[in-house]
Image (cartoon, rainbow, N blue to C red; front, side, top):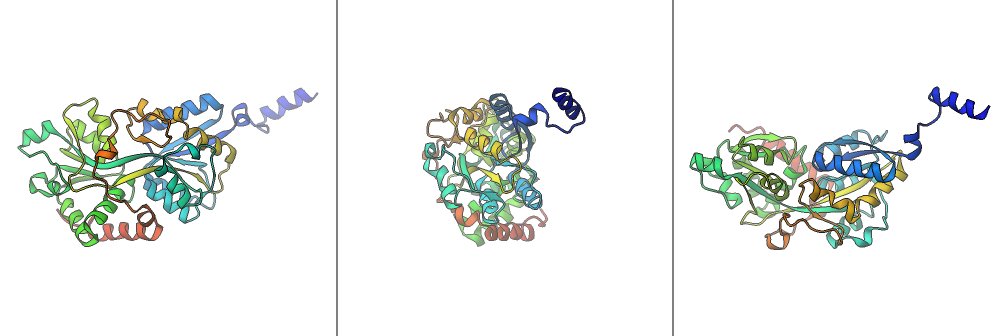
Length: 339
């Protein structure tokens, strides 16, 4: 009988399971873990599409997407700084898609989409800065820093934590920021001097914020929203927009070229650009500025209009050649230095 035959085939694993029939999605997530999980769970609940989510830093995701390019495993790369998304687009690792939601986005979110002919789009923005634990600094008699230059003071030896720019989009943004702010020669001299005060290069760009809150380091260089996320629960944590000026990110989203679940990927893409989906950031204490014009900006989010932002050149510093060159130079001239 047909019904019995179907049951027999299903038992033998020859028919898709119900969850597979509804669809599945492999998501590489570059925002904080709590946000990744909340968004994935909500999308599953709303669509019935099963999400297999992996959370990594931006540089790690780029390396993985590149390594898997001949046999792609991921469908969507969601979140993380825009520079590696731009590099992936340039190298043909992602595919173009025009969501019906693009017209609802802020101009800064549409620019990378236009620049890459539809291969990546902005989902949030945030300014680079640093934070410190006022209680720790007071106990050690160290003045509270206000500027990038302050972090070079010998009093901060072994008191500064920042991520490795090879794995972290945050740290690559720092490298590209000081090069644009100071010029390449002086920018690298700054990174070499800062190296003397760094106690650890973390894998994740947000990790130094948690270390500051726990008192494990006095200062952490992060995106300001990451420091604010821990400051809401710890009044000793202070967030700084550096006096000289600073860079910023356009957190982005891309569909992986050769995605096996392309229809599910497009559904995620459209959903992630809605105001309701973008509110999961603030709900999980992640205070980036959302890209949909109708999505409310969290009151805790840094006021970008009040911060001295440099004219960050995303086209140049998101290009494959420039990003590879700067990272290789940092690996060669900064990381091996003694302290």
